[in-house]
Amino acid sequence: MTHDEKLKLIDDLYAATGAGDWERAESMLTEDFFASEADHLPMKGRFTGRGGLKELYTLVFTMVDASGIKRIETTTGGDYAVVILEIQFAQEGLAPAETCEMFRFRDGKVCEIKPYYYNPAAFDAAVAAKKAGNA
Image 1 (tube, rainbow, N blue to C red):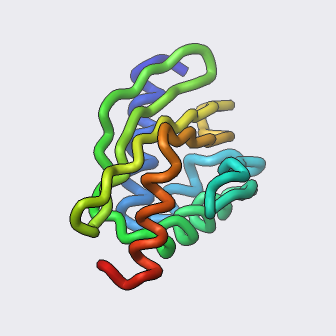
Image 2 (image 1 turned 90 degrees about the vertical axis):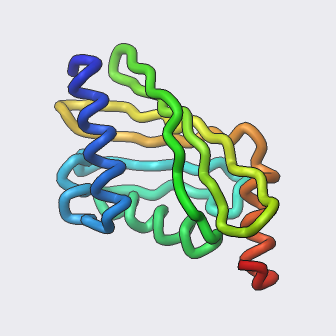
């Protein structure tokens, strides 16, 4: 895939997931797709198959009150792309979760997503704020 093809696929995937169009989103994933979250995060685990991304999003966005996702930049190389982004939270005073999401491609589709959080404490604080009812 070219740089521009990867960017378009990522743009389309973010648009589909943001709109809740899971049928469209799943059509952009390989059958053996997986997303993995690190063991130190509250949403830790491996989410597999085309339905794995919806499972992960549902888990994450029921844990926190996100007010938006700000995409900063995307870089590509080989079978990979990395998106730098911030997850912004609805609660006043919470710092955004600064994240890089690694995408791996195969046969014109996404076969893996692996997020890396700069400071997991920002996400943990958003989880705690939602549990405390400070939305």
